[in-house]
Image (cartoon, rainbow, N blue to C red):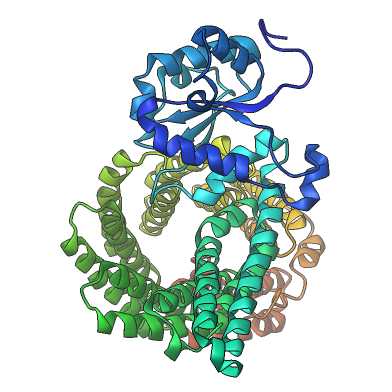
Length: 615
């Protein structure tokens, strides 16, 4: 045991170290931590029958009567399970905070120091004593900054270690409880409205109660569409995301659209956009289109009523994006272009309102990326696409300087780099594409090192590794490409087994497998399984499901099946395998497929030429 540490159970869950200049913010943090009640199913595991943490020590409350401050602080630090450092520029400049960190480290070591970022940027907010720690002992950062951090998720990041429960379990159970609260609040509002209709004599009080309940439902609905979603996406809990969508939609449907306030309409549109996002990711483009169109009608009406409101401009920009993106996924070039160009115009309007606003400037980055994607996949102009992607990176760089650890910006940066690499590969610049993918990989690996359980980052890494394997194959590095493909397939299958509701992972595993087959069938590849084994791997190329992603995969499989049959001398069988592929290509207007960026016409061309010319 470290010097000075108390024997047996300690009195405090944590000692909060902070600057007196941050008293107001820390008092709220202290109250929220001590007021949190663990979900019932986690209380036994945490050894907290009543669900509450032990008290937390904060000097303003506990040292006012102390005659010897140094002794009191030492005793409190020794009697605390954890140290929470409330990080801010004030805390970074405080010698007292630095002394408390060093004293706690001597008493209990590195592993029990947590950080709550309450103001400023990490570079200026973290005390020097926290910035120079051994590798593997970085503090857990919970970001509470207004408008930046995800408040509920940040709170859970501290509650988890304090209570001794896993963060993903806590997010899971806390999310279920909040969902039940939303449903209860919505039902309460509906019940109150019924009382209004039946009991006119108490109409006023019933209306007031309904307003209170509706406000409660709106607040919880906002939580579900922001903080909770981020946590569940990071944890890979797509089963719970479905519950969140269902409950949030139920909360927003407590009254008809005509009777909703503007705020309630905005909330409903945000919920519909979330459902469209999840449906698109699942390959259900029909549902995605329906929900995106419904959100579009709401945000369009709100913006028409108040055309200069930045909040409404932003909300309608998201609707334009989803209409455009789903159009891109459906192969509808007209809808994709209209949506993306409208989104870009709205992004310009936001920046015109407030040129220094990083959030609005980020919208311009997204807009440039969208137009680059349109140029690359719909128009087949990789050179123009590269210009858009480089423009987006140039615009993102100063924003990242302000917020270097912002997760959403890092995801945006790595996505942009991935598309830039694709545009380079399509132009034949394989070395440049490989270098760009390496830069993207460094970002993703750093994010995963900070948050090893983040399933969403692992999903992005799978896309990255598949792209790196494609570049290696194009450079004639067959052995390296095959090793990458096999490793990626194995990881995708493992992630899919852990989260059966996430349909992306089986698709990714299948694409790794199909690119392996593509390499095996390449005449330059030295070793390959017997053709019979390759045939078993391909199967009959039936789609995994009804979505557009599955059709892309089955079409790619069909092209490979045609190559395999041609290699066996089965000309008629090869032709039959290409028929459904040609049918789908005739209905699409894109040069590259919408999710995997495949040029199916080019993939099929060698088979057609070997059979005597394209048909």
